[in-house]
Image 1 (cartoon, helix red, strand yellow):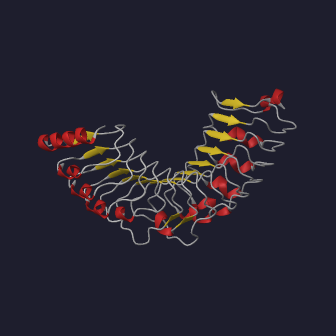
Image 2: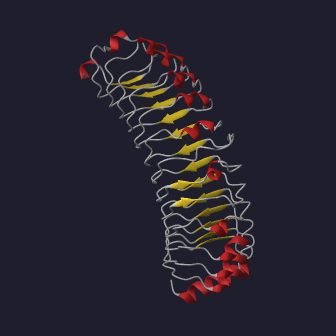
Image 3: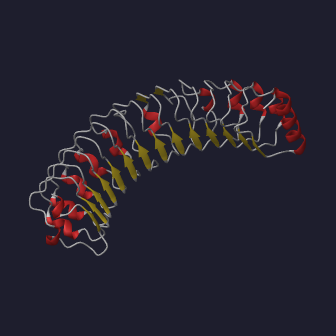
Length: 327
């Protein structure tokens, strides 16, 4: 889009009191200063352009509630960005940020922030006041350090940290009764991050595709947990305490080194999906019959010696993946 054409569009939007403006995929490489005249604008989409930076005047958008800057070439934000006090949603995915932009730190109304697919290495929110943030996407970066403050943001319900370079999480964190969904898959964890067990409201935990060798006994502290995805790791056995997670609905252990399953697994009365494929299981406890809520049981590609599905009575409608003839 030619600069003169863009200026004209912005001038007209200012005259009309436009509230939503979509300028995505317009090959824009620079925003003119008159962008700041759109003081009634609540939603601005600038995604999939060629922007390298934003003008200072962006801070004049006093009514802005949502901005989409994804898929540009932005490496930093102007200090005036911190003046967007009404901003609730910011999408910065697929840019060139190598540091978490501090201009976001004072946006107390911000609820959703997507800064995935950048070049971030450290996330330190020690001095930040993102007390209203509910959804934070940091996936597909190069993050190796996350401060405890990230796990303790007062309103944060969903935290996505998959596809990074994390080896550990802070050990000392206060108990958290807000976070419900945490994705740590495709990182470099060798040990189960024990601090996660302090997240008292966590319902969904993803740890797939790491190098974790064991599940700690403290897993039983996660009383709210409904889904545990820990496929493609190196786990050889499960602690009995995992059988105390009475709200657990989905347990995915595919692609580990499990050699046995505790018979106490029958205590998981709400379990609907039990994924055990691609392990080293030689037998399955008959107590698994007692999983009355079970809808899917995956036993594929295990060296089961004496398993015969006819010996097991499952609830009607159970999808059984793997049968005696497969082994």
